[in-house]
Length: 291
Ligand code: NDP
Image 1 (cartoon, rainbow, N blue to C red):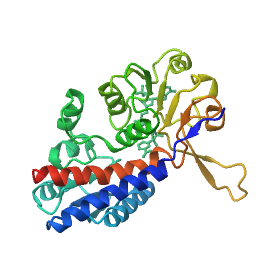
Image 2 (spheres, protein in one colour; image 1 turned 180 degrees about the vertical axis):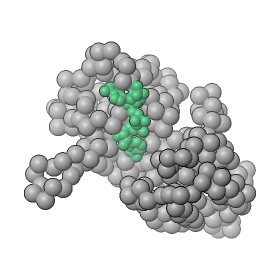
Image 3 (cartoon, rainbow, N blue to C red; image 1 turned 60 degrees about the vertical axis):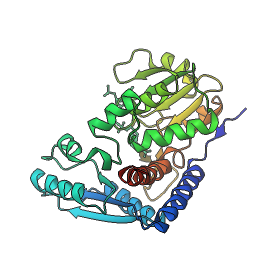
């Protein structure tokens, strides 16, 4: 039997609509949540992300502030902008688009963002809050992935969860979220031995690696929930004009024959990331006002 395909695009649209409704409620009380997005340099992928973030922020009824700085921007200049945004009452959320150009210490920038405006959830204060079970801002991609898991497997207590990848952005916070829900969590990475065997025991398998179609169908436990965070651009042999296509970290066609539910790429976790960014901005706007 073929797996349920988890429609992240539709789920994200629903989440954005719920955020927009809440924002309308705030507008009636004279409150307009604002998100500031900072882009340093000309990275083409980052430019697309920033444009999409701004468009969806406005669509949700929130204020969008964009700051585009040249690749030559110094760390001191970027820190000065972050400090200005921290102090700006119209700004509820601050997102500095990563990666930053060489010469800028990304960790120092992340740590300069006021934790209550850190809608990416990367500040050590928010990382610590997540790890200790305190309310805080949670990184958008794993937050979105966990919502998709909830949509098909609301109770993961006692289940075996395997997260492949241990980045601060995806893997580690994903594992924390699953642990919070009482799954038995294994974090796998490039040094993990017998990765396929580790994956085969997973009732919930999250791949956040960045290696096209690495997870094969025979790595998957029958009936498992498979969440593919990977976004990899690969050559498309079907296209004559040398165009590329997007694939995940999971070999989707094989995996969907074994899994119980699976997220596609594109249209799975990807759309959830920006929707969760908007949800985090709303959360930050409310929390700052004690709502
Ligand atoms: P990183 O490169 O920071 O981390 C990748 C992780 O995968 C590392 O922990 C690494 O292990 C591990 N890894 C690499 N090779 C292997 C291997 N052969 N076997 C097992 N583990 C391996 O990536 P990110 O976490 O930032 O992103 C992961 C993927 O998710 C990428 O494809 C990225 O494009 C995508 N992504 C998607 C987003 C979305 O919106 N949907 C948002 C963010 C990321 P080690 O630590 O040992 O090096």
